[in-house]
Image (cartoon, rainbow, N blue to C red; front, side, top):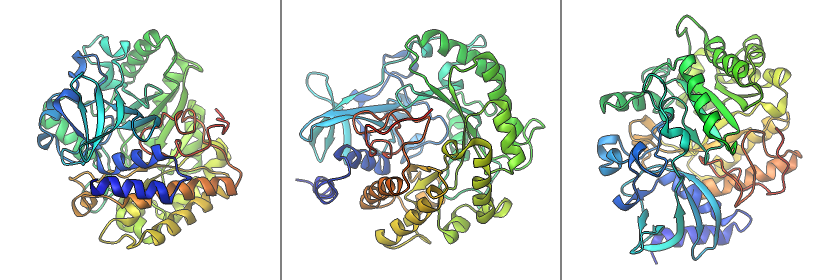
Length: 439
């Protein structure tokens, strides 16, 4: 039995309260997965929904390094089921790593499976091509380019501004490849719109609404790079808010509207609310004061950690604490050169942050860090954080929620192993399945 299998099984035995599905999911998210050519898609001409690269690359190599996976895209997500561990339905965002010990391949009967150390550990399901992806906008652009869906179709991801005005080594977040992802797609000749036109977004949503007859798409997220000056003459609140205003006017009540933006002053946050946004994500990225300064230098320079946190608390007066859901990037706490050296220290720090926000009724969520190789932290930490950190974080997250009597945050679909659709971390998989979802 290979060492990776032994490590995973040891963690499942040591932390039985964490769903076994979450252990595999976190390992796939932190370390990526390789794809046999038999498991790749035919891009937008096939039967499988391809990876859209909706904001970051979420890969362990640049496009030229991915081989055939750069020409025939892998699926947007995969679903794990069954196998020797009897896995419940688990939705996992695809992060390509040709050297990963995990590999998706078809067997002799053409059935896809996930293999670890050469052993088949689960069946693999891939998302079918949605009907709305088969229809173009009037200008020829694809729905996938303008309004891709993730989380098995639950969430429409609207990256309105595909670059960030925190630019260069002294401003960019040290784990973030949004600017490089823009550059690599343009260099490859792929369509990758820098600033999305409001009318194009509305037209794409009309197509989704028309063909999503089962109403699987339930929410949309407005997001993109930080705006420190202006884009098209608009500041951050008005730039992103105008999309929400147009969407809510054209499709009142059709989707839960969410915006990922900086922690803005309360009057700006009020504008988001007035535009029709229902959920506000002012991401705090990493809790530790020193690491925030070192790994988020632009945010420290323009706003500052303490002011960022004050603004998050102030925003609850506008949206209500339940609807303020800041994200953090789980794993950068342990990133060299400045991160914590032990899992105990990292978990203690992150839990301190969780307790701070949850004591105010705010339920953060997190994305499992993918060490993209073009980022400073990806270059120095190609293996990311230890899997044990991610498993213990799931344990600490659930315990802290229980300590403060909180339930799963709204706008993320159902919680619980076998039910969750949130694909870029396992926090929803690890919560009780009977937790009420408030929307």
